[in-house]
Length: 340
Ligand SMILES: [Zn+2]
Ligand SMILES: [Zn+2]
Image 1 (spheres, rainbow, N blue to C red):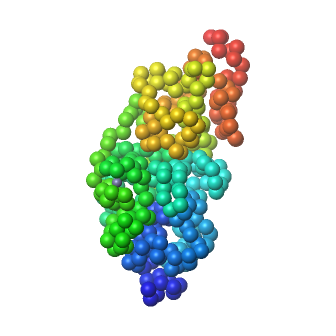
Image 2 (image 1 turned 120 degrees about the vertical axis):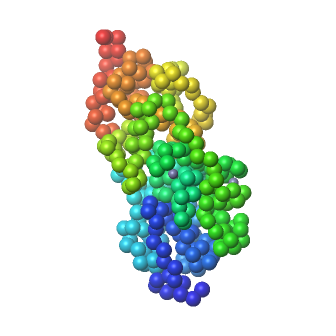
Image 3 (image 1 turned 45 degrees about the vertical axis):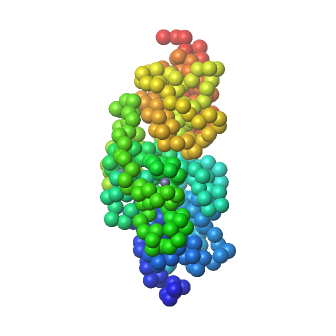
């Protein structure tokens, strides 16, 4: 295609607000009337494959540079479309492999995705003039849409496939026919037509706090509560503890009793929070957020019933924030449990 190897591409869309790098790249390919794979081979060469990995997490520098130059986008803006930009807020230090705190796992196998690592809000997609996928939809605690206050979805309601919009033109055979990115790549269902579901709420304060934690990532929403890496890390720690058992008693049962609600079946074994389905994550987050509403009081209650120990609260927790160290330090002396 004429012009595609020139310094500025004929089509040089800029990323939409909070758009994911992968989504932007697919829009650029389709904008040129090309399939994603054809476009990438043409621009980057056959040797430089990017779709066999979680590109939004592992975007190489050359890709950032190339996209910035060819679309006349400031490099910081391009960089900001990657999940690397959450470093220092959702996780302490970026790493290329293994679980990254709060970043949903895509489980990429060749060019396929076996996980459910990209969520979507059907109403947001339906309201978009150009349907696109937001970076914040990759966050594991982002289970409720900050705009519509309805549940996010993590798969196609018709065929249960995870979202993989970069594969749409494979099924359709033509980049133009692929059209909107709002269709399921597997069965063609229009994801904008998925029903919007009210989020399950066990406690209104906990639900409000969860929404508040999500609002931080939506520039259109206000956030009146201070969230930082420390607080997100404590939330993560508690979410993990809620899935572990200690001598047949568990913190999860304690919280469920306090809230008077029932447990749901959880995927067994050592599963990271970032690999769980949206139902499991939303359930666990409701419980964790109930603790986060009054961490000192509620953790003390739990500790007094023997459902959580000092060691467990700090297990594998590197550099907890001072306030959490202070709260948990009270539980060092187990004898105190029996004192008034
Ligand atoms: Zn929405
Ligand atoms: Zn489907």
